[in-house]
Image 1 (spheres, one colour):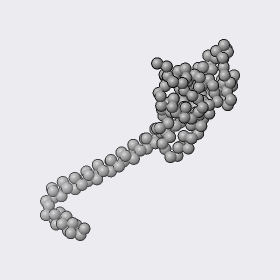
Image 2 (cartoon, rainbow, N blue to C red):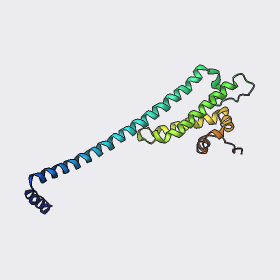
Image 3 (cartoon, rainbow, N blue to C red):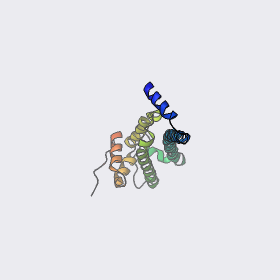
Image 4 (tube, rainbow, N blue to C red):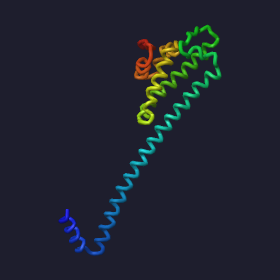
Length: 177
C-alpha cells in the first residue's frame, strides 16, 4: 500500500497545475456520480416501499367498501355469511345478491393480482395468511360466490381460479368450450 502512495505522491509532484486541476475534477466527478447513484437507489427503494404500502391501503379500503354493502343491504348478508344460504333465481333479492357476488369476485381477483406487490414486505407478510383465510372462508361458506364464479369463470385467469380452489372448498367446474 505504501509504495502506491509513494508512487501517487511522485506523480502528483511531477504534474503541472492544469493537470492537477483536471485530475481533481475527474476524481470529484467520479465521487459525485457514485454518490448520485447511491442516492438514486435509496430513493427508488423508498418509492417501491411507498407503492407497496399504498397498494395495501387501497386494497384495505376497497375491502371496507365491500363490507359497506352489507350495511346498506343487510338482507343480503345471509348469502355470504358463515353457513351462507343458497338463493333461488325467483327470490326478489337474487339480482342484488348476484351483483354483490360479482363485486366480491372482482375484489378477490384484484387482491390476487396485487398481492405479489404488497405482500412481499416483511412487515405485512402476516397479512397474506389473513387474506387467504378470508377469501377461502368466503368461498367455502357462500354458495352464491362459488356458483357465480363457476358461471363466469371465463372472465378470470386460470391461476386465479386455481388460487380460489386451493383456499376453499369451492370446486371450479371444467371450462366449457
